[in-house]
Length: 294
Image: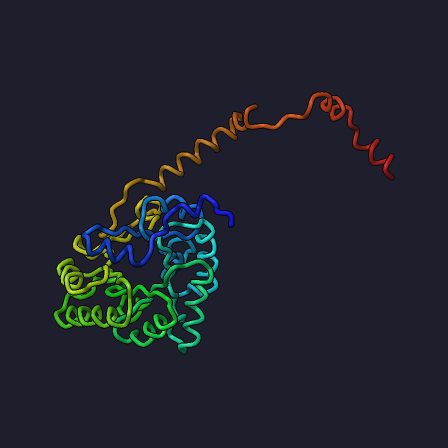
């Protein structure tokens, strides 16, 4: 049996993540929606999420609700072709797991057949039955509590969750229920830091925070937010590490200037004819050739 160099790269697994959580090592997750971003992120992060956030980050939608299974499959295929060593998680989009158990299993199982290692779905205790059905089929599930973007209309917008006592207690109960249902990790989004810390302390599985303070087992941010690729307002919880939008525009502007000044392409960026062919090309007359062929 032949082995490629890829076989020597240790893939990150669910047991590794659990062990790192127990050892106190912080977990790092970011999004990727294509092979290029996956290859950039893969050597650095522990988990790559093909998020339904592709809808508002890349596809121009106002939120994640229009994202379909077909769209998710398209972007998951692209990321999976990069063969990441990071654990690859695919988001279950709106209306993909609000169905019969059979349809939900087919949707989630299709992600694994396309190269995902696990799926992520939003919601609390009401998702316990769905999660158990998936876990029973050996489909690893990451939960998602707090601000769940697919519930944006019910929540009345993108707002911090869990600030009221009843809501905070419900989130803690939901976290326990999802762990008992078999989730291997939970994303906690846009909740007070103290609540995220209490949830993390109470669980044996890792928590991945986004706008949930510093005490989660790990952190996730959208790739494009980390690199400043999106112009305009950024959420409070985003820290950008580059002004990618401006940097890329400046690079593109320099190229456009070179084109307009006729300094691109230069000889080193151009192909040349073999010796002796140039005279043939120079003597070519279109009218004579057309008459001969006719």
